[in-house]
Image (tube, rainbow, N blue to C red):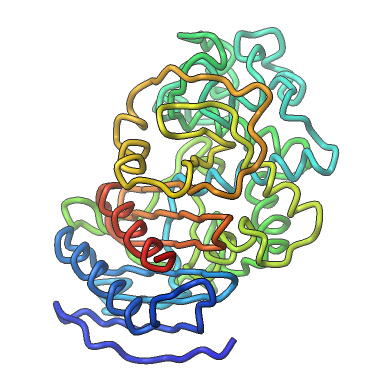
Length: 387
């Protein structure tokens, strides 16, 4: 693909560079898309005082990159498509991919129970849930975060062993880090390696993601953006117990759009990994307009913006919701909008893709800001590409 690089004049004194190829799926001219992305990005950056924003779009395997602002207000280093951002809970999509990859390789089954891999939990209430429950926020009512008093693995096992469900597995959806974190532990245990090693030395290389990390190496620190919290104070992630498994990936727009393309089936990965990716797209529970896949959340396409805003609202994170189980699980669909949000104290991210259209988008920012404007921005851009 021949990439055309150009410098864009940007309001608000924002630096913007765009790279794009001929988007076969798009009726809009590149200049029109360029203008739409700039307008949408600049509006959200102004409204939420976002220092830096990276947007990547893929259409039928052709990529566009738009980079705005700075990776650090202190150094004024510009955002590029290789700038590393914290992606928060989008990390969970890699956790479930690792689990399905282990399943495809015969190392675990998602119908198994945790005690098979974590013997200390055998016979406990936690052992009554399945790995599918851990991957769909339907284990029985965990808190959003691992309790502060849990500081090491032994304390974590004690916490899981004494945990009592507030509802039956599969009855309600309660968004939680402890359960998906446990799945990450189990997947890594089944592969006989630490979780961070499993991602950094196995999964990321096989996905073709050389600049993705749990722990950013010294040689890549210069690419790591500075995050800013809602008060504009500089912050970076201080990961706790199960943080690696639930919210600690740092990656770039280049790598993350590659992951999107692997999920769309347009980026070549080996056959077993391709199967594992498709397994994460199976639907297990219905919650309003949203179908809960393995971490991924999907909506029938074409999708109304109102449905996306409902499914990505704060209440979906902080409240429990009765679910309808899909038996058998819904096979991976083509005419769907699949998405995931992610946040840390100083970073915000959003990923969405439409398999039928081979369209996908990545939005990365080094500022904490709400889900709604991320979803609106992505919906506006992909809608234009599918106009």
